[in-house]
Length: 338
Image 1 (tube, rainbow, N blue to C red):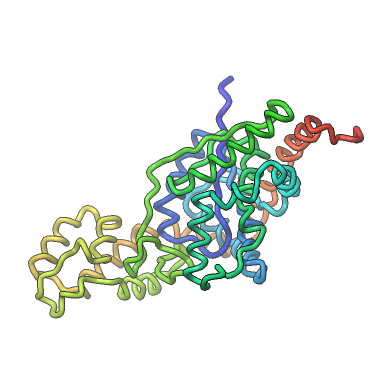
Image 2 (image 1 turned 180 degrees about the vertical axis):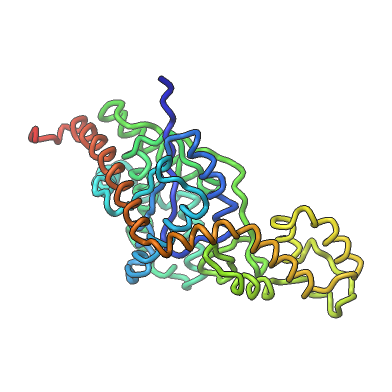
């Protein structure tokens, strides 16, 4: 019997998902569900590390993010979608792991250092006050991965330090208590980082530069109209450089079949920005049509979304319970048989 390897992947519910998420991970996630035993975590506890004062935002986005996954083609019969906070074993395992890693090691984690720097840029030198929960994010993530015995974790190169830290914690635990935990491996793929409408290297929820999977046609058109173009083009017939224009950038992604024509006309002053943006809007709307239609179905049937999460969480909880039984037994803290 050929047992499928298990994957853990997921999203922090801090907002609806956008085309950057779709191109960067969701498309690949849909493909992986046919080859692997895939668990998708809706990481609400991790979202609370920097949204602890706005739990209602996190709660609402648990369902928004789930609908985005389903709309993109995630099949609950193939992928198990669950809510992190409904698995208490994750928190329990996080506490055990916290004894196996020093504060200094967490502060040296390149991913954590980068995120702290980003906080400083947004909130000032104190970084918006970095909490214990934020600093301990790699420990919590290790618990997420290992409580479900995940073999593989799909990540971009910027997240490799997080997986390496998880592997360190697992090796230390197994060295002390016996070979109980699966040591996870990073699954590094071609994760596209999509630029924002404003030219920022990252499309982000907090940067107000994203096209969301839930956006309707009018919203998409309005956002495309706001996209940064070549500032040297003043009049309609002025030649421009599509390589430094965000409209040209998105044509390469969503309008590949007409890209050469678009770029030629742009360089030779044969098309204006308004026409170019209208064509791009049409292409994006067409590309996202099926996703929007599926999402609308789930928006109109919230009970189905709730049932999918309940069933997925129930299955995930049982796996987590089984892992924690073995963990406690190996640590000699299984005091009673019940």
